[in-house]
Image 1 (cartoon, rainbow, N blue to C red):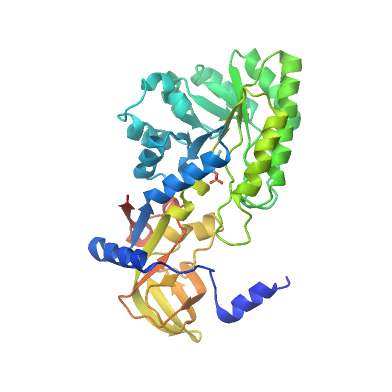
Image 2 (image 1 turned 45 degrees about the horizontal axis):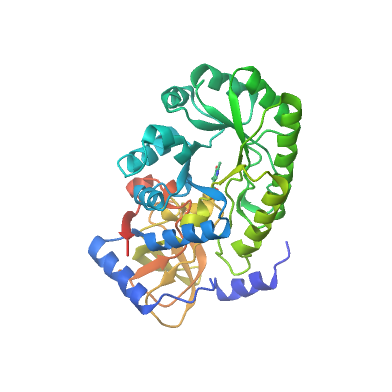
Length: 402
Ligand SMILES: *Cc1c(COP(=O)(O)O)cnc(C)c1O
């Protein structure tokens, strides 16, 4: 594969993450927290989450926001978003419980009535045991195949259904269409079958793939959904009233990613063009609400000179907060608080596994054992997939709430 000019520059100089650096106050705060709490710490900035939520709502005012809990299931995040009026997308019974238990005692209307206005169970594949436990809550659940319909009929007959469509995921950082979604050609058959079985299909959903940078995916998906809603009405006489446009809203990890505003302007126009005004539109942003709200602070626990460059061993790595580098195909540049002339350096995690390599090309000043490093924009699909491998626990979560 040919190297782009940028790759070449990176190869020579190491990674330049484009960050403007931390403010002095922010740098002080993170280092003080590391001093008080020990390391590694995963710092969640709740004001950032509030800003993200408000920005999303302002850009798509007619869309009800269901935060996708799998991006980061920290209970504090759930509470902060609930206070702002957010709803939740859960994909497992434990995620359901994290949401339910954290919003249960918060002031609002009677929970039994509104719980499914606040939660959608958006995993199309559900264990029978889970269906049985959820049935009493009259859950809103997604499905994408006939076997799942039979299961829902038998074990959660009180559920409301949302059919997940398979839509193009081209150009998204994480694709989902190989695992989920009914082919548009069989969608109306599945909807008709659900009604025949005495179930109620209330909506359609799709997911264009996570960190979607090809906005055409959304517009094609909307058109597919509109066609299926029309055909459903013609064939079964049933009206679909919910459209769930999923997640995928991209984060500006990199300046080249187009801003959300570019997407939402057209999205809003297309929704108005294709659907009646009383259609309930939901979205399930995960990454967008949390990615830039979290910072990891870790400590250098070892230093060596390997393969011609300084190599630092830190107390967090690929099996922990940096797991997103594998599962999420994301990159979190490692930065130093200390200043000094930068050189290309390797950074490794703490486990006894060479796979635990965070980067071979960080640009870092000369650092010593005991110095602190940090990684920004590490809030989504990071600590959520952290393990206890080799006995090293996940980073300690610290909340900033100002
Ligand atoms: C993962 C997921 C989301 C969140 O996706 P993001 O790209 O993080 O916004 C939303 N809905 C479903 C069904 C998901 O699986």
